[in-house]
Amino acid sequence: MFGTLETLPPDPILGVTTAFRRDRDPSKIDLGVGVYRDARGLTPVPAAVREAERQLLAEQETKTYVGPAGNPDFNERIVRLALGPLADRLCERTAAIQTVGGCGALRLGAELIHAANPAAVVHVSDPTWANHEPLLGNSGLALGRYPYYDRATRGVDFARMLEHVGRLPSGAVLLLHACCHNPTGADLAPAEWAALAEVVVRRGLVPFVDLAYQGFGDDLETDAAGLRLLAERAPQLLLAVSCSKNFGLYRERAGALAVIAESAAAAAAIATHQARTARRLYSMPPDHGAAIVARLLGDPRLRADWEIELGTMVGRMKSLRALLESRLAARRPGTDFGWLLRHRGMFSLLGLDAAGIARLRDERHVYVPPDGRINLAGVSEANVERVADAIVAVLPR
Image (cartoon, rainbow, N blue to C red; front, top):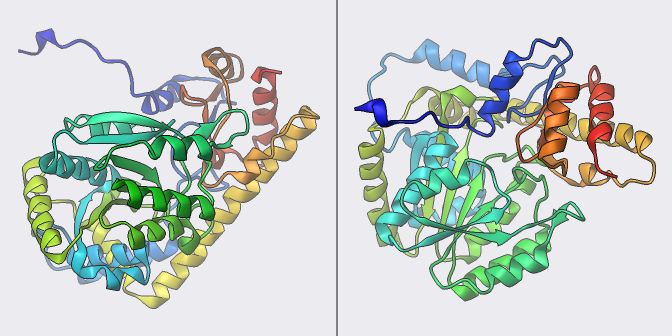
C-alpha cells in the first residue's frame, strides 16, 4: 500500500533543527527554532507554572476523559485572559473549546469555517508563519494573501494592506496575528487596528485572530488591545489561543478556539459543531497543560507571580534586541538596524536571500529558516559577537 509514497522534503522550520543537530561544529548557533530561551540556552518552565502543576498532581485523583470540549475552567479563564473585561459582555455569544495547542485551534477553526461555508477563502498576511497555510488549507479551504510587510522599511505596509482588505468580498476570512507577528516582528499600531476594524465591519469580513504570544510583546493588556477592539466591533470573530510560549507549556499542547457569534443562539449551535469536529479529529484534548493553566489563572497569587516572570522574559527579549542592534550598527556604520528595536516578540526577518542563508549555515554555522527569520531568544551575551559577525558578513550592502 505505502510503496507509492515518496519521501517528502523536511519541514521548513523543523528541518533547520535537524540540520543543526547534525552539525559537529562546537560553535554552532541555532536561531531558527521558535521557542523562548533563557541566558543558559534553556526553555524554562516558569516557577508559577511548576507550582500550579505541583498542586494539581497532589490533588488529582483521576485521569478520566474531560470530554471533547475540554476543561471548562480553562476555557472560561483563557478567554477572559484574552478578552479582558469584554469576556463578560460577550459571554453569551462566545463558544469556546479546548484544543490541541494553538495549531489545533487553527485547524479546528478552519474545519468550522469549511462546515459553515466550503467556498470561504482565508486570507493570510504576506509573509506569515510557515505552518498557517498548511493547517488552514488542508481543511479544504481556499487561501489568499494580503500585503503586510514592507521589506524596505522593515515595518507594516499598512496602506497597501488596508487597500487590499478593503476590496475583499463580504464573508472573506482575514487571518490576523494579534501581536508579535511571525515571522516579521512588525505589528499593527493602535490607530491601524482601529482603521482595520472599520473596514472589517464595513465590508462584512470575518476576522480569525491568532493569539500565540500574548504577553510576549509588551504585556498582557497591550498585546491583546487589537484583538479586543475587533471583538468589540465585529459581529463575529474566531480566536485561536496558544499557551505554549507565555506559559512555557510547549509539549503539553494547551490551546483554545473561541468563536464570537452574532447571537447567543448561533454560539450554542457553534459549540455543538466544535465538539463534533473535535470528536471526529482527535476525540478528547490532553488535559494536563490546560488544567495547569486553569489552576494558575484561578489563583491570584500564582497569576501575579506568573505575570512577573512573563515580564522578565519580555524584558530579556527587548534587551537582546538592543544588544544585537548595537553590535550590528557598530560593524556596519550608516546602516539602519533600528527595526530590531521596533519589532516585538521573538522574531525578525534578516532580509537574506537563499544564498545568504546558506552562507550563514555553511560558513558560519548559524542556522535560520529558509525565510531568514531570526529568533532573538537564541542570541546571548556569549554568542552575540559571533552572531553579529556572521550576519554582517552575509548581509547585502
